[in-house]
Image: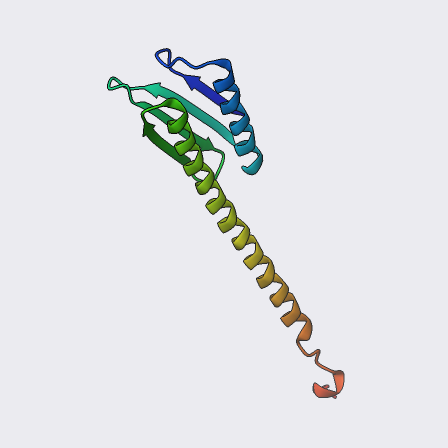
Length: 126
């Protein structure tokens, strides 16, 4: 679920807010389950906009911040940075799962290839 907070000194129209919400839905779809997105859009004293995005639900916190002269550019920059981090984390996680699965398969194959001792090979006490 995405949480969008726009500061009172930032004036945005409905179309701008709808664009942001569509982008957030796309980010949520590519994120792992139970991920919470939080976006804060602010305007600084020097007429510079700041966009902060945080994704909570990973084993670590993913955070992106950007500053720009207009609100859309700030949002896009932070969005792109967050997507890049999510993709890197997801690929690392996927690679780790694949490696573990391969190790399990190799261990299983080695276990199956172990020779079974025959009765004739062992000494039977008489």
